[in-house]
Image 1 (tube, rainbow, N blue to C red):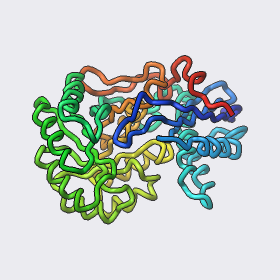
Image 2: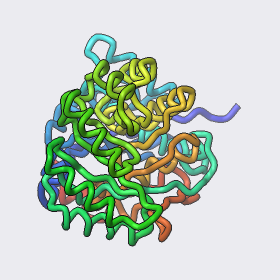
Image 3: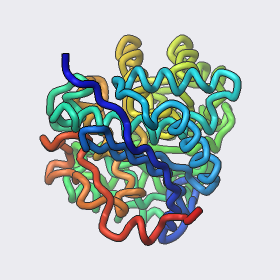
Length: 362
């Protein structure tokens, strides 16, 4: 019987990464990154991370440290899914919230360690085989953007091989000119997606869906607040374009009603909100059963491994946010697609000097 391994080091840190300016549809200016490092008794290591957009990472780091101290440090190594269930069960009386965001960092580190110890890439540890996955261009678009600037950004992505781009909209009349300008300028074979970042009520969302149909948009993303289940069900039943949502939902327990209500055609799990890569894997499996496609929320170099494990992960999102913190992360090829490497683990490592530059001292 092989010698059992145990965790000899389990640490959490908080990094604060300032952005160059307001970014994305929500206009964030900084990201709090919760970094987890694991090491087992054979010297194998695992790197994990989670994040909070716009601040508040200190309480997540504290939660991660508590979870590591109670359930990981000094304990025997167990498969990542078993560890996730142990950690999630500990939240029974405190709720998912901050706990899931903290678990995400531990979960990613656990999967990285698990795959490294087995000597296989993460996609293989998840049960997949390598494949090429298309990436859509999402960075650099704003809801108040001039149509000419949006066109320039869209054409830049098309020039890199992307087969789709995603605009940000505000849910008002100014959106129409921007959407039409980009739709008219895109080359043949490049799709348009639209993201409203929860800015609409149902009436406005229905209006926007019809405008999206007029430019042949591939999907309309998050037109309603994430918890508006009945609104999403009503919208999905009447919308002429597919509806995408999910990046603000926490875990399968919050996703299940959306599947039952046929409230979306595209699921967009977020690594931090979902509680890690393992719960994203489980959610994508359930989505496959319901004939719902999956397009994870940014971090394509990590989520390409999930895509290799599940055929219904149709798109990855290029939204450069944390990428500057990594040392040469996987990039899309000239065809606007990603194929994972064959190195053990998830293949991500911190860039030289990132820890020293961004770590928040206790």
